[in-house]
Image (cartoon, rainbow, N blue to C red; front, side, top):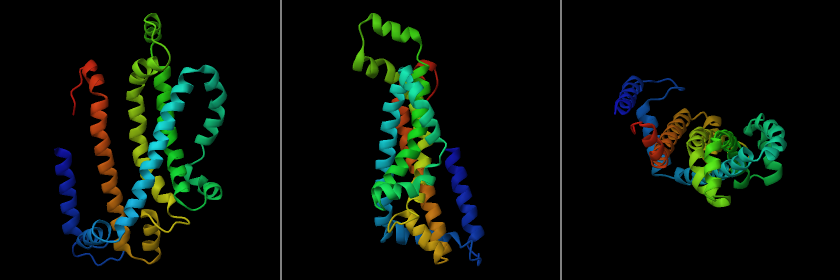
Length: 249
């Protein structure tokens, strides 16, 4: 509640402070808000928004699933961890945006390239957290599962996955805002649609009102996505909060 009041207060101050602005780089917030509504929410910008959100959802989904699956394998099998850690550390050190030219050569200029970049960038935060979570499972949990004959997929679903979920959630929380950065940057080069494409077009035409509109749209998207995942997180980790005696905020 206090956070909402703080945000509304900041918007009100910005609104009145900028309403009489005549500086080209800092247009009035009322003009920016009108631009956001007319282009992004009620106009032709919806196609760009839909394109970006579709790529973001697919790329983020692929990154999360791959990060969880590979993380569970690496975290539980020492031989695999020893063999894959060096190449993964090498790839992780390279910013995903630096691989956009490479992705263009492999996948072309379509949505596949953008999805690859988003998936690659969001893969590692989830992967590292899942690996750490899998390695942190107490030996007693494995011994108890073995004594009751719980093995294979049943063990993964009922013992390992619940234990790893809090760390996986932490990785996804990092991956969500990162996916927004990657979807915009992947659309800035060789693209003909999307939020990043529109941002570059507005910047090249010195349309600062449109540029600020994109900034507001990205902020709103980040807030909405984080809030939605926050609700999902509460459901996923309700048992964990109960065990640790923490109140749900």
